Image (cartoon, rainbow, N blue to C red; front, side, top):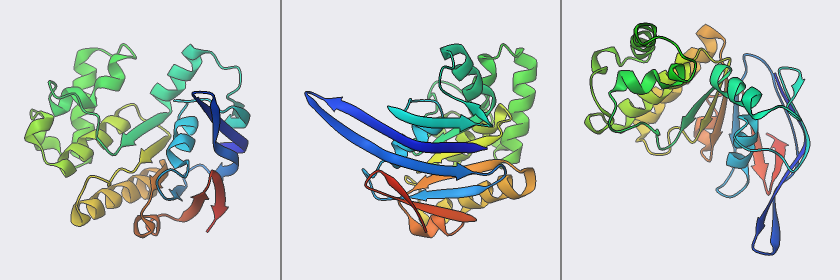
Length: 222
């Protein structure tokens, strides 16, 4: 499903060029649950941003579902992000002024989906993550674990083929982290959604079928 070949990424900090990714090769199969493990600063979040078309590599080739990302227009990239990829982040990124239901339906706003359909699908997604009774609540009225469930429901609302999760349990306690990982495992096992988990925690990585380790901008097989 995803093929990254000799991916490099550099940033210019003042007059100094800093290389973050140094030739990453990685293949992710459809329906796989993969953990990318590494210490802070090793390049794993940069890698996820490239996988999710939030950033572009300095060099190398990235194939998404067999199609080269090179040369895709901004409109095409936005379409892929909105229809194929669900993002889950450590900080939830929910809009504080919106209810859980309206936060979940946001991806459908950009598709021009009518309000009634957005709300119906949003309620369905909240039910799937165990938050159906909290649909009227705003983020400030929810615990961290509940907010992350809403964020996962939002990622699912667009019916993605892959979820990219960047430290999704980093702000949660151990028991809540276990619940969130159970939810990812269920989505992967029961619905065939590809899950790529970015984490610094080897314990979480063990919950995935396969793990790779990032060290100094390179991927190593565990």
